[in-house]
Amino acid sequence: MLKILGRKTSSNVQKVLWCCEEIGLPFERTDIGGEFGKNKEPEYLALNPNGLVPTINDDGFVLWESNSCVRYLAAKYGKGKLWPADAQLAASASRWMDWQLSTLNAPVGTLFRAYLRKEDLPAADIEAARKRGGEVWKMLDAQLAKTPFVAGSELTVGDIAMGNAIHRWYKFPIERPDLTNLKAWYGRLCARPAYQKHIGSL
Image 1 (cartoon, rainbow, N blue to C red):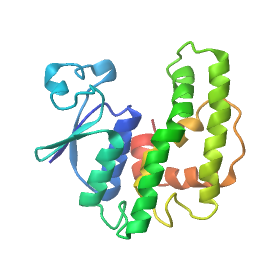
Image 2: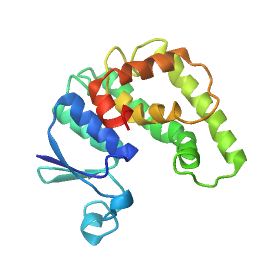
Image 3: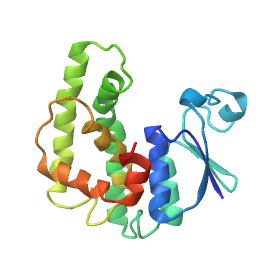
Image 4: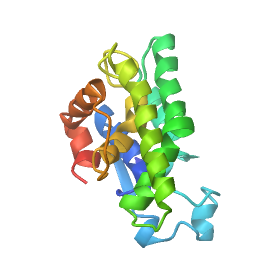
């Protein structure tokens, strides 16, 4: 059985849990990281030298980096569902996963540190992240004016990569641009039982 190492409150672990739930893939999860520790111990570092979560073990195949884990599991167990059979749709979904890391992650991460972790960050940094966050979400809003999900008519790995970020975005006590398509997409995610179980209810 697939083993997932990582605490369920980690945004990156949540991607993998949501992915597994959507494709009906059973797994065993072990609490690692955060208040549980163990992620800097030699045994864990031998699996994941970054010392971060998640790490998965699929019958002896060990993989880390959350988006890579989602791509692998979707391609192996959810092909034609989360991982589109059409190569162009799959590439589009994968592109949005990369966009989450390269473009979206920085502003949302700063706001997370400020409002959820309660770190004492400079007010100018928080405001810059709020403004930048609104700008980058507008890019996705434009895409969602064309398709109900980020890569087309169905949920894919591209949506999985950003599901936690959009949930946090609407939890932050900030002024946000009124992005109709983005909000409707978030509503579609919230209507999915697997999303509610691993992200929306936390």
